[in-house]
Length: 216
Length: 275
Image (cartoon, rainbow over all chains, first blue to last red; front, side):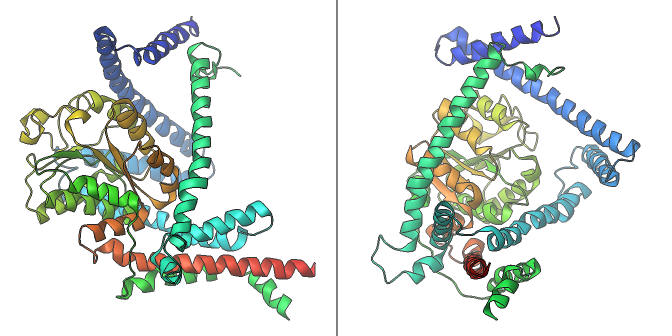
């Protein structure tokens, strides 16, 4: 029963949500509305499960003194601290002079911005070390990358201003984005879409059961 | 001799690369050099759509960025907001990325204050709810389902601007400023399921993913990264704003990355011949 009941629920819900899209009847719309309400409620519960799982994972790391356990301590400490701070008063998360806001703007913001800005350095270093014209395909990739990089900046057009309109570097970049890029992306999206549809169908029909857990 | 030099270049300490890129992004910010920005059709179409709207029209401007991506998306969001407020267009905003909520609320307040806009009459901030897919689907039925109250705990029915505004069919369009794959939720659900006209403002790194949707007209406009923001600033007549100023840094950084690629390849081929 522990496996059959979830399978039946998934079959009913999955089949209904797939079919109701094509049924413009009032009953179908009402059930759809209720299903959406359920998603909100279930979503909130999964949030609680997620937080519980996070705490469990890091508590385990700390209690067993696993590798890099002090980071887990920071995670749990930050979670508790910000939660207490946020719940300390109804205005805590909206008061521009409050500690919650200050922690956000003077701790989290700079940390996040710093982490993301490192990307520029890594990209430059990786481009220098790994972007090699070793094969025809790699050369094509490299040429496309250089054209798009130049075409997306004002300097690119300034360098090719002597060329007729339509053949400048930004026009070439535009062509690459509009045609080869779009063609490749569309192929990927169609493939992914078909894959998602097939996997969903397998789950709805109970062929794919790994989501139930507890087995291989 | 030459081979020795190229060997050295091939094994160049990465810290030199970091130093050059750091200098290439930092120093141009101090200069007053402004490079001409060419307007692309995908940005122009976002501007044209908003420009064509009569005063009092409501649009939705979900802003989903956080401090890590604010360098690219904050100027874009502010430019679109300034355009809307300067034309008397009303704005409904959400922030479906938890780490950006406070930032977005501050941006909204700052730009609204510039144009002397009143909360609840000229703009509404719905705030954050978890699981963007679920929230976007529910807003397609009624904004009040996921957001019975706004960010400031007001009932949506008490806000004058929200009178008679129930779902996407009551807003002219959605301009989603988004740094995450949550963009797909807006395309699949808001546009795909509910038919809401949609434009995107995304980071440069994911912009290429959405040209396919532009060509199929599932989105009517696309602003990509700082370049998109700079174009929009230019369109609204603010060419001295931050995105335009920062484009010089981006340009110089791109040039240096290209130079690094060229040097790296010359070094690779020069040393390979000797082996």
